[in-house]
Length: 211
Image (cartoon, rainbow, N blue to C red; front, side, top):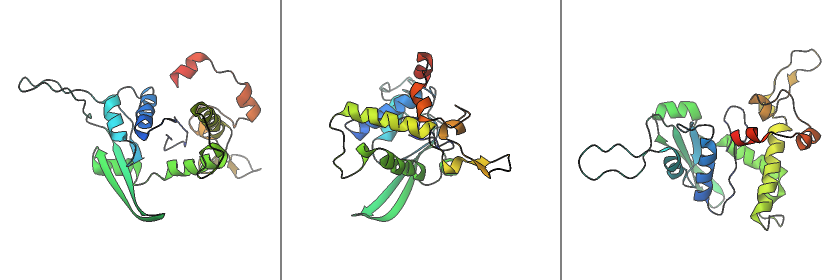
């Protein structure tokens, strides 16, 4: 799960099924957005629509007749876009988009018609973390090792790696651009961390619980 503007990795779910992972991601995201989900774009797999309704949806008020409603429903104001890729083997034939929640024009203006940012992040992930590379012998034999490896990768990505698309014009004549990490773009720090700083920084428990 990645923020569209800052490229900050907000969460990762490692589960046995995609539907379980989608629900866990929504629960993580709800910590920062307790009232309603932010604008989201996903692929057409994983059960994200159902996970959103389960996490933020509400049972409608009883109108006074018929059977009382028991199932949660989406609320007004949600924005959710699904991107479906039609393939024939390894060949991409077509990309279809569907606005599931929200005004179609407004949702497309906010999110675009792609999931390119998260897909590019996944490519970076496979370059940094051998345990998520496809068709390799370096996969994790136990889930806890995979979770640990991915947690370290996300920390490195957010805090120690400059992102080319996040650089800003330098205010000095010595160089043209100032590099920024996703954590800098999100306002969490004012510099790119070293690996030593990342390993030796002690985060208060209250800060960890609020993330």
